[in-house]
Length: 305
Image 1 (tube, rainbow, N blue to C red):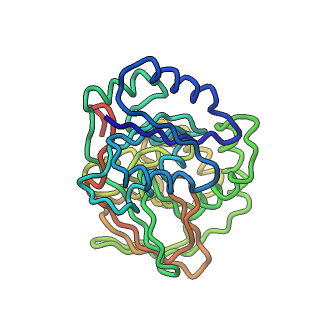
Image 2: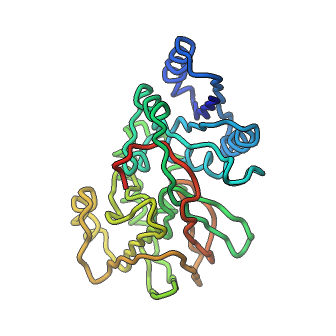
């Protein structure tokens, strides 16, 4: 068995977790284990691609949604055929850990090893974004956001977050509302169309984003489609009034809120309109986003959807 851990140790924040991992595996017989620590943004993509091409069996992201996003893209960019890709695992140590909520994994090393030992691997879907202007392709595992969320992500990249992730997300969302000008966006799928002023759109494989906001309660990571949540011309009051429902995973009943199930969507905008994926800035519309059914194997409890 070959296990590779890719660790986002930005600002040395995971030094204790890294020490615990190394001590755990030195004292156990788990086969070949390697620890790779990222040194810069997108370094995990390179490390994951190399680990995949050298033939590891399990590839574990240690960090948050952004680290997992880079690991997934490294695997998908590798030259190895899909049949030889490693199973992906997650030891969530990030600021939000939203995908971990969907798949039911914790920061416990013991629980992670139980998943490995029991072979708790499941095929799940990915999303794929293709940017028309640059031709770049990016995969995502959780949620792609268009509109306000993408601008909040860019703002968070320059934030210290000293008061904790919950307050930090909330602060930047409110600040985003006050500064954001709704974009005119046109979306088309095989059986639906939406056009109008857009506050936020979530194209969801997982259910949570923005630090535990259940934006897509019906999303299923292995059903071959996305749940799309569209928030059109909403005010800051509408948002605050419904925030409690969003946290609980209750669909919002409002004339400017709609939900769809799709496999592919084309997105256009006359205004500059940004896209983020898994909390990472991706680029600008126009773009095509489609589902890749059963694209990866993931370590997770069997009872999750």
